[in-house]
Image 1: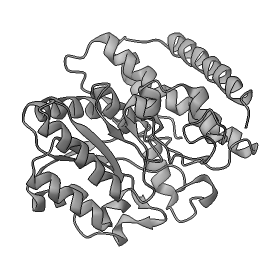
Image 2: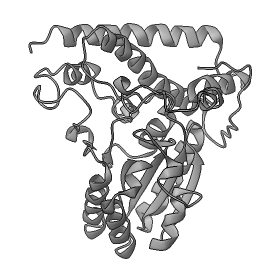
Image 3: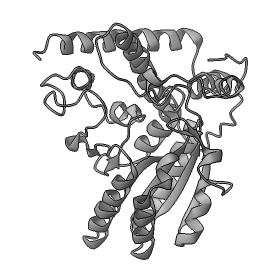
Length: 319
């Protein structure tokens, strides 16, 4: 990714403590380092498929960190940060991607079609739209039981063209369910640019038609994501209603690694590379005097060592 000398993202730390700011840094860094390792293993033939979320980590990490541990999240194929933020053991994740029994599907799937119910993570449904209805169902359960909890579901911009997306929005709005719908607006649905998918200026403009609130945020700004979702979740726990959150970001890799990116104009990678969520957040933390280059190097070194140790455990597991 293109390196820049100073942050191009407008971070506002508000009242967040130093501990929270540094904790978010470690949380956003971990999925990046895991993915970089997975891309190497993919090319070595040690895993079979990979849907890369590099450049989009701020969304999954910010959303997950903002929720309570017992609030359900519906993940998708580019939200590794959900699993790492909820501290799902990497050896189990790696075993999943290698198709081993230690994984979450007993070797039946080598991709992201899995959940971790014990961590309140529900696995993705491939075409993404249907999981929004299930998130509404869980939110309905919370509301009927007066539990004061929310559910959150991720979906992609391409999935907003599916019928079940609209069904989920409608029932959530009519019944005023405490659910947060997060759209990762990354520019493409498979290889189709959004200019060929919809005519509205923003995907969240559709929220008005259902009578629900909408919020548009910078999906590469981990603080904006975290603070926005924290605020919304707090409101919805007391006064249930659905909210549509559109996170503006960009897909820096192909739909999956085998598909390539030849259909994407090169200048977009240049533009969005400068908005890398980790590089920019590091620069912000350094400018605030919260971290040094030496501390960053130490954190990265320790994290990589832990990743390698956990992968070694997964390799030793039987098929």
